[in-house]
View 1 (tube, rainbow, N blue to C red):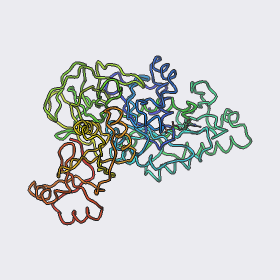
View 2 (cartoon, rainbow, N blue to C red; view 1 turned 180 degrees about the horizontal axis):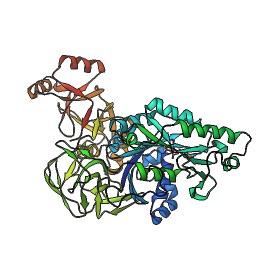
View 3 (cartoon, rainbow, N blue to C red; view 1 turned 180 degrees about the vertical axis):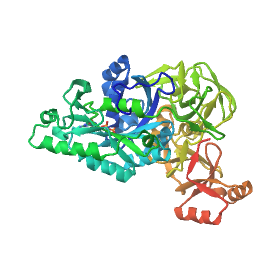
View 4 (cartoon, rainbow, N blue to C red; view 1 turned 90 degrees about the vertical axis):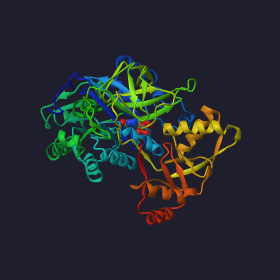
Length: 533
Ligand code: GDP
């Protein structure tokens, strides 16, 4: 029965035991803290010890970049793999700052479920909502963790109501908080009738109770009247809320809700048990010619992220690939569908918090790092020979366009190479104007510009500045009829550029001029999202 077993038991089947997920939240809700706690719970003993030892570094685990240290933001998406119970968890971390949302959206294409962390005092915040919408587009099931119950919080019913109303998502509380803020004493497991006490060491055991009338609640809520009020509330939660429904959850219509405090490491075990039990194993993935099932014997996967120069001493470049089917074995040869060329997977890597290790084998749902020297790009599909391409790693039309000004003209060639690298990595988008004028970079958020500038300096010794361009908007253009497309491109030469893949991009000076062109050229489709191919 769902959420009823004591210890999560997943089958030994390597695919069925995988849980690949991300945490979505508004900055400050507690994602980093929860990540640390999940790793402590889930990690192998050695891993847990290590995270503890490097505690101060964990929150800046991607501290290879100065800008992250300076501003206390996390820019880089990373992957953490850990085992817990019978499951292998792949937690895909996403940058917290909204200026890096493109990276986050791409990462969400590689997960099967998400944990939505909500600050109990604040409820649903802007960024949570936005990320939730992205999950909904892909029908990604959501498990909710209401965090910071140890602080003054809003009424739990209020919070559940808000989730239901603002996200149009049914809620099924699994645990219920006993007290809040200073009186927070633990959680009551609504299904199993057990109490997890805040004062129990390490979020360890639970205490069975006879029901809501159990005298334990009077002990936990000693202030006069508190226990009585709480009982009424819990009765309402027990009787009035929707029961957990696996199908509705898996379809993305209902979220199980856990309450806790990541900082106090409380309620995290219930959350991870819940993930083991109900979060879906790797899903099938749509490719251009057919759907790919995770249990197919042949290996397939797609690259959703590239990260270069993680270690500035070694010019390494890692492509993060989600395995979609079959078994990836170290040393195997795969086919890079975009070029048709073989690629040898001689040193695929797994990531564990701070560490990496060579992966001897990986299965659907796993994310492996593939070191390469520029062969792999975001959106690339690898197979064991089949000519198929996974869809849906998106690129968004940038909202800020800037021309690059190089202070040392002698380094123009080096700059072109570096920009190409950065664009392939997804740090910025690169547009080469058809009129031969200097490269234009496009970003969704302004901080990306700072990152580019800092990295060009630090990794390539290229000092640059930005100059405004007259363009403020760009759109990819397509047409059924190639002749129409060519005609449009021909007559708009000074506003045309090509992107990294050579796809035509129309650049407009204002929203007004874009609309004007759209109206005048009905045969042309102007799009602001493009799938990587
Ligand atoms: P992120 O921006 O979502 O990654 O949030 P962090 O994990 O960095 O947490 C933001 C702040 O909230 C930090 O100061 C944390 O110590 C604090 N915090 C996180 N979880 C809790 C919690 O359960 N209770 C309390 N009181 N503070 C918390």
